[in-house]
Structures are given as C-alpha cells and as structure tokens.
Image 1 (tube, rainbow, N blue to C red):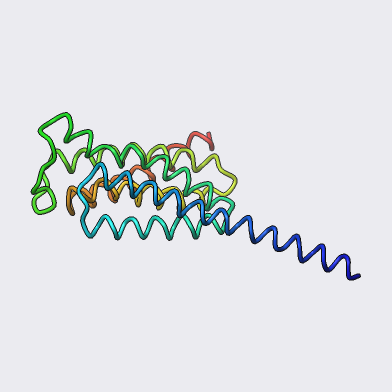
Image 2: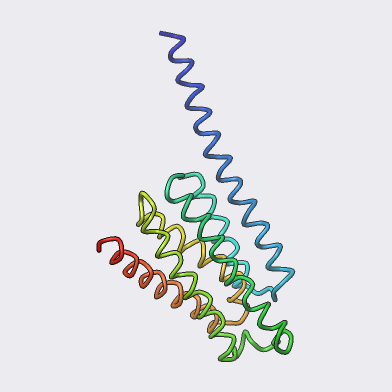
Length: 184
C-alpha cells in the first residue's frame, strides 16, 4: 500500500507541476506582448492595466487547462492583428498621433473596431468547433480583448470601446452564423 500512495503522490505532484509550468508560460507570453507593446505603442496607464489583466488571465487559464487554456492562447493569436493595427495605421498615414488619448480620431477608432470585429467573427466560428465551445469562446474573447487593448487602448477610450464592441459583436455573429451552418 505504501508504494501506491507514493506513486499517487508523485503523479499528483507531476500533474500540479505541469499546471504551474503552463501558468508560468502564460505569464512569459504576456511579458513578451508587453515588451512588444512598449516598443510599438505609447505607454499609458491603460497599457499597464491591460498588461496585468493579460498576465493574470493567461496564468489563470493556463493553470486551469482544457478549453480555457486553448481558448486564451487562440485569443492571444487572434488578438495580434488588433494589437498591431494602430501601429500600422500610424505608420502608413502620418506617424503617431500625440493627442489620440485625449481625442482619438474616427479612423483610429474604426481601425480598432474593424480589426476586432473580424477577429471576433473568427473566434466565434472557431469556438463552435471546440469540444467545450462556451469555455473556449470565453477564454478566446478575453485573450483577444486584452491582447488587442495593449495596442488599441493607446488610441484612447474610443479605441478601447471599439475593440470591446467589435469583439463582442463579431464573436456573437460568428457564433450564430457558424451554429446555423452546423445545425443545417
């Protein structure tokens, strides 16, 4: 009986170690995204708020595992276009807008809204294919939202609102359209 208790203890320790390592990988990924955000975008208080939220989310969902982990990592990948969209917009237009945080321009908000809507559609569609679609979708939307906020929140409250509305609207639309095609 002592051998089986020892084996069970080792198995449980290995299981917990794997979950902790997954959480640490999530924190490392968040750190890389924050470093990229600092080099690409203007740093504000909202940057640090989104960065801490992203690190906490990836660590929590990484430790939790399953559809939560898959969804949050897919969300981070899906949020990359939203993350770089403001930098690309500023690069191809007139450079960085110094007053965007105070009065974001309509094109800045539309860039954030448009890219996040497209990302939301993709996330909603992919979520229906997962074994646990609701958990996957929640993890993916949160991962994409926080990743995108590292970029779009630098354009001010308008960019942040654009990403939130775009992701939710796109995600729900992608979910509904994809669900109808699956049911048919």
